[in-house]
Length: 280
Image (tube, rainbow, N blue to C red; front, side):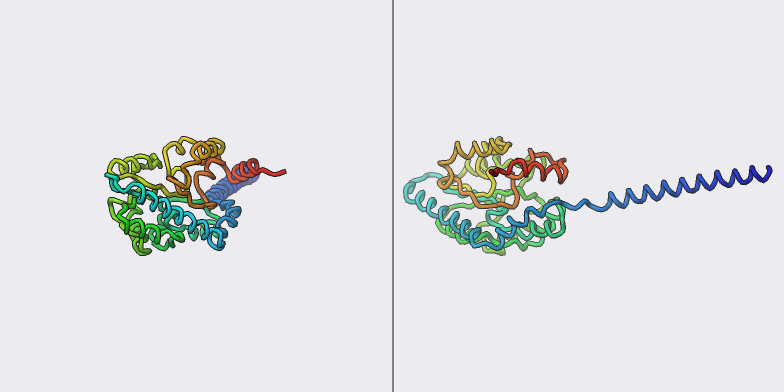
């Protein structure tokens, strides 16, 4: 091998080494980038969370809802004294009895999207406060012989911590029979659990922050327009049989804006929010 051949071989090996190094560095950079979760574009939620935590208006609306619930319960107790079936009230848990705005605030501060692991970690802290007026009303209902059922889409692995949180706040009659969590991983519908309660009790009131807390008909209303139309068609039931609590932080109302598409990018979500804004 002459000198020129030797130089050529060395150059070839050097080129191959550099190519391998470059490829390795590129792969490492891609792996490192994919390992870092993309920050969520959720700062738009700050206003709704601050309103929930800081405004007198949010508290006033909660007290108003539970005052109305007591009035409707008293009305039923007065007018249906000879009811053969024991009365029941069905309430949602999150943002109806328990205030999870601290979890929502954590997501915004850390630029995170909701995920099951962080939610379960929050549930296990058992630190959610009570929605204003909730404990007092539920205690009153129990004192009048009304059975309270807590129908929630918290999971079975979260049931023990949920029960402890409720009991720590003084919420009455929390046990395995009355705290009905989600057991079907493929369905968030509460209809079967409501039907199980209505088979043995006469449900006087249903309370929640999401339309799906009230009846199956709302579960079938997926678009924004459909949800509004469903409320209009059942408007006489709100304030009499259905009592809605305010929740501007999250819910199916927002999922409807995104067409229930979990694969949208943050930019696509922002665009859909802008499209639905009505201005002049």
